[in-house]
Amino acid sequence: QVHVVQSGGGVVQAGGSLRLSCEFSGNVFSINNMGWYRQAPGKQRELVAVFNSVGRINYADSVKGRFTISRDNVLNLVLLQMNSLKPEDTAVYYCNAQWYREGSLLDSWGQGTQVTVSS
Image 1 (cartoon, rainbow, N blue to C red):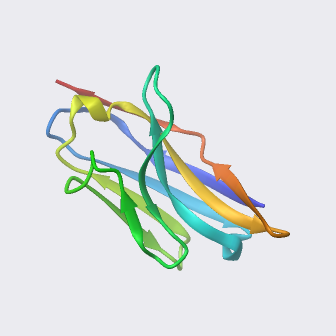
Image 2 (image 1 turned 120 degrees about the vertical axis):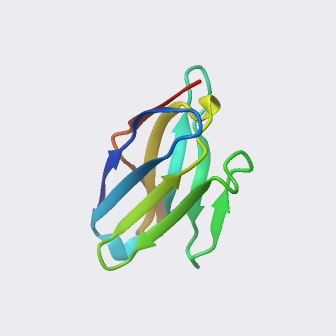
Image 3 (image 1 turned 90 degrees about the vertical axis):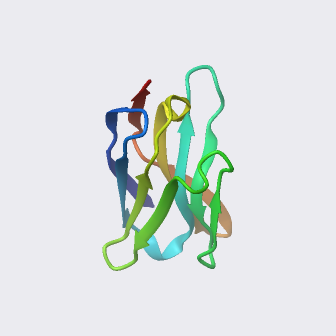
């Protein structure tokens, strides 16, 4: 089992910055992919930024150049630095770990954190 606990978020004016943090625990060596997703009201959950199994980063086009994902493999942390925030970035942000158990790829999600960007 992989456990995910996230922190950060809040309310910021357009153009401002926020940072989200996520800590993994449990069977962290089984993690294949890790990263961040978000869900705005009335919309489906979407990828924001993720590390794949070989460390390659995939960003959503809407956040490229503004958001930066990073990780600390010693502390089992993944961070999301969000700069130049826009009102359309307002959403609940979720940290995710995809991990293998007995050949199946499973998902563990953080509790979600609200990010609100005011215009």
